[in-house]
Length: 583
Image (cartoon, rainbow, N blue to C red):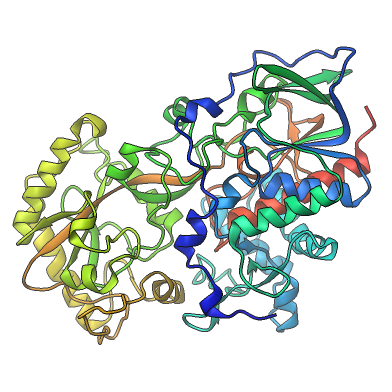
C-alpha cells in the first residue's frame, strides 16, 4: 500500500473535515430520564443488537455483530453518521498490532501492561504486584484492551469494513512515537499508531474511517436510523430489552433481543454536566451531539458511575471558545520555536511541546498558599520569527490582521499591558483571574532564561525537546511556512529558538478544553455496564467516550481514543452474542 504525502490531508484538514454546523447545541440534548421505560406490547423495530451512536465505538460493535450473522440496528441522533470520529484524524492506537509483528517490533504483554498501568495510574503503579498495583477491575480493563485491540483491527480488515496501515510520519520518515515514549516501562515506543486508509492505501482520516464502516453496514442491510435520540431503556425481567427514542415529535420503541450497546459520545456540550464534573472545559472539538445522554439513561437502570471528571484534554484559544463552545480545532501541539507559555505570574509552567492531554492538566494546579489556580489561563508568547515562520499552523494566525484574538506589543512590557486589557475585557467569563503585578518583569526573566536554554540546546526547567516525542511532533505541527523570510532553526535543539531582543511580540490566551469527555457509567472487561453492586446490568453495554475510560486519564499515543473505542465496541458485541440470552 502506498502513502504518498501530496495526497494526504493535513491533520488540521482531517480534524475539520466532517464537522457539522448546527445553530444551537440544545437541539441535540436529551432530557434526563427519570426511570427506565417499561415494556409494552408494540415494538416499532426489532433486532438482536441495537447500537446507539455511529462513531468508532458504535460502528465497531455493529460491524462485529452483523458479521456474526446478528440482526443489527444503529441509532444516531444527529442527521449524519460518524459522530466525533468524523472530526478526528482517525488514527487508532493498537498495541501488538500485526504491522509491528511484520517489522519484528516486539510488544510483549507484560511490558505493554506495565506501560499502560504506569501511565494510567502512576500513584498506584507497583511493578511487583500481580495486578501492577491496580485494582483487579482496572487491571482487567487494561488487559482486555491489550488482548483484543489487534484482533479488533484485524477483524474489521478481514470483513472489509475498515482498512489500516502503520502511521508513518513522513515529515521525519519514522513511525509515530507514543505520548510517553520516554518512560522506562515503554519497551515498544513506536508502531502502535495505525492510520485509516482506503483500498489503495491513501489516508482517509476519521471521516473516511467512519464512512467505511457505515457503508459496510448499509451494504448488508443494517438500518441506520438518523435523527433518532434515545431517551430511555426498556427493561423486562431484570434485563435491558430495548430502547425508546424520539424522532421529531414521534416516540419510537426498538427491541433488542440480545443487547443494547451504547457508543454515544461524551458530555462536552452539556454545560450542566461540565459545570458539575469538570475542573475547567471552555470549548470542545466534539460534535454537538456529545451531551452525555447515556449518563441519565444508564443511571435510571441503577448503573454505577465510574470516574466522571475525566476528559481527553487539549488547550483551546480561550476567546474563540468563549464565542462558541463547539470549536473546530484545539491547540494540540503548539507550533513555533521562539515561543513559550506562561501563567498569570509570567512564569513558564510546562514543556510547551508535550502532548495536548497532559499539557492541559497544568491548568488545574492549585496553590494552597495563595488559594488559587495560577495556571487557570495561560499565555502563548512569541515573536515575529514564529508568527512569520509558522503562521497558519493553528493556533498561530496566518497574518497579524487575520486573527481578532491575537494580542501584540512593541515590547514585552507593552504586551503585558495589552494582555491585561484583554483579560479585563473578557472579565465576565473568567472570574477574578488577572495578571499579577509582577507579570511583565517575570515574563522578561522567563524569556531571558529560555533564550539561554535555546542557545545551549537544553531546557533546564522542562526538558523541552529532550525526547523523541517533542522533536518528531514538532516537525509535524511546526512546518516552516512557504515564503517565510525566517531562516531554518540553527540551534542545537530544533524545538527552541531564542525570542528576538526586539519587538514586536505577540500572545494568545489559552484555556483548558477537550476533544471530548471520557467519564460515565462503569464497565467491566466485557464492556458490560455495572450496577451499584458491581454486577453487570444484563443486556446493557458501553464503549467509547460515553463510559468511564478504561485508561483513566492517560492518553497513550496518537489515536488512543479511537483505538479504545473500536476495541471495546468489538468486545461488547462479541460478548453479547456469545453470552447474552435472547430476550
